[in-house]
Length: 412
Image (tube, rainbow, N blue to C red; front, side, top):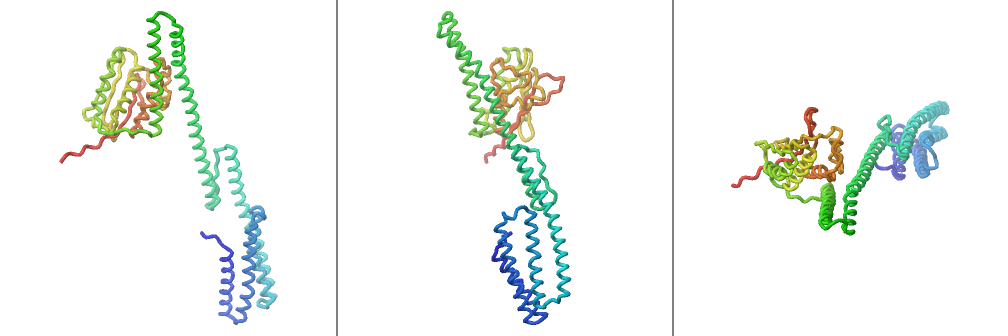
């Protein structure tokens, strides 16, 4: 909608005066028409000029209530002036002018009252918005800024309310991010403290030539173990950061999931059986290929199977199942260990987190396996989750999905 300008206002005043003059000419004489235009045109021009003068100094008027009163005065003032001029020029009799003036005064009084009522309603809405914005500035986010009606102020209230909700959500995300950052720093510090302390003690022992040559060689071997553990931790953190930042350039192709599962299980079976844990594979015969990067998905399988073996007691078992799923393939790693409480089903996929019964990383695990697995699976467009296990069944079941591969074109 275009803004009313002074030029348009003056054009409206002159044009309206001319139209009224034409109407008078049609009913009365040309002299009456000319006098009508002479009276109305100056009144209209003065009203338009006064309106724009008030607009230019609007900040001096004060609140909306006073502005409403000035608006009413600008509306009724020209009518009173025009009536007085018509009376002077004998267009209107004194008797008619008197009763017309009374009617105008009565209408003006009712108009002022109506303006005051409406301005109170407007001011109530303005006060609600002002109070709400002040509360937002003080940190409050639980606000209801919905206003009655469908006017512009109600729209502003709705937009401000939506803005506050977005602000609260952004602050919650920032707080979660800050909390995650603090937890990450604390967890990294914790996981670095043990190997760094061991490295320092072993280095001092070697430097002081403690023990016989065979003992010192054992110290050097342990130094290598801790250095490799630190290197693995740093590599895992770097890879996780790259995946979460979307900095991946993996080649996706058609992967035979059954062969990948069998190969991974066969590679991990000897170490598991040495600890008394059986590793089994159950492949659905109707399993179709998946669209994935075989090396990365094998990394996921290694992480999940290794984690399952780590938390399965001797004489237990780890079973890897692969079957068709909705829109692709689903792979599950199930163990007969201590299980994961339902409250920890989401938390175990966070960096440096494990289930309540699996929190003690006495085996050197850095708590990154499941976090990296989730990042890899989600980068493939799949999902990973903990399957609810009935109370009578022991162990944990981790399942992830992969999109199916499009059929390869048949050569002509």
